[in-house]
Amino acid sequence: MKTLKIEWLHLDVEGETCNRCYDTGENLNQEVKRLKRALQPQGIEVEFVETKLNGEQVPQSNTILFNGIPIEDILNIEVSNNYCDSCTSLLGTETFCRTVKYEGEEYEDIPAKAIRQAAYRVLGINEEPTSGNSGCGCGCSGGCC
Image (tube, rainbow, N blue to C red; front, side, top):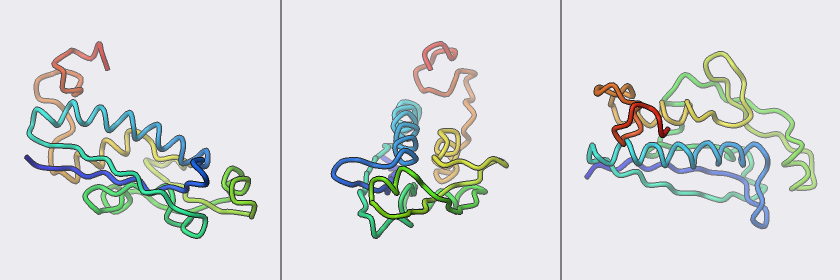
């Protein structure tokens, strides 16, 4: 069985993370479930790994790796940073965090669509379903997903 390893690196301060990372985590959890449903029938196992970072590792925070490759190296994504009030509160010092520019829009979290698109691209398979369903892997016509 082929494996897709998705690793999420994010700030963790005593079990808390910043708002940006929290939102990315929510998007990622949803997409990992969706990817597992869609890819398992194709013989692809999705493995999710969460790597918690400390305050000194903030520049790496809110990064997603697909089989070890950063999302920005898979898709046309620009990475920059700006002031993060949430991290500043958590760390007690002025902090700047990653932002991404995807499809012409700047995001503080990594959008679900980018996560899904990067997963399929790194696997070298088409994201679009061939059977006319929603691509969720359950055989529905889009009703459940």
